[in-house]
Image (cartoon, rainbow, N blue to C red):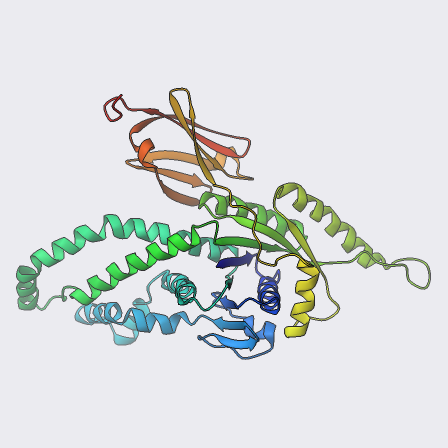
Length: 404
């Protein structure tokens, strides 16, 4: 089983390349599903066929779908939504306003992740290719399982125990005062179920032998700069980038009948060549594949397959090199060193702090709570440094917790 997530700056053609990759996987004899989690779906446009919230066969061994997060929300969170609407009604909020207020922030991203998990668990596909939203939304989506699991594991159990133990007293008091209803067991159970489902998602997306991310870009300076930042953020969250796809590369112009190439096209080709050199230098060790700017928009199965053949040639379109561990722990004398690669990060952007059994890692606007391995939990932090695109945190065993 392989899961490949396609992302990139809006407008670089990630949907087209995701669809093309899935089409080639199917043509080479494996069952493939390509699904879109981008709220602005364009997967149907790429295939030139209507798609819906259920997998639809578009070729032998190839299915496609566009996730309907609103439909999933109504199916999965009806109990929670009903409770919140009742709560707001008791507080005198107008029904229409209440409907707008119970749209939970982040719900669409969560439900999109659960759809990916469900399709993988169904076992119908050899490969699941995910056409993600543009970069910022994708990073928020990939950070959600760990962040929400942290909240549910630490905050929710205490809240649940309090509500259940105090329900008999608070229920009578609330009824007598005409106040808001306490959350029923169905609401509490829904949150518990979400926690278990997010654990499955985190296990799936965090397995580098199964899941990888593919960065799509066009060879332009602004786009390349964002791709570099994206690689830093993905590394922070522990996701592996298996390749970079440079799309819409302008071919070098041939001489026209007058003996001179078109100057406009020549300028574009030269500018893109400079950026492609930056890409190869920046993403050292990561395969960089190219797709030419085509004379017509690649819409439909035949055009997508032509595009995929140019990208991958005879290579496996979802092949991935042996997984590398993004986080390593090494022993140096009496100390342990935790190393985390953060390519392209600036030293001024990186901060690290310890909170109990976790490290709080911050790079720019992104933050991750990293749970320490059991051995390091019994150590004290000696210090941290960031150099050569690598964060190193030094630990020493605590004599009181580490018996000799």
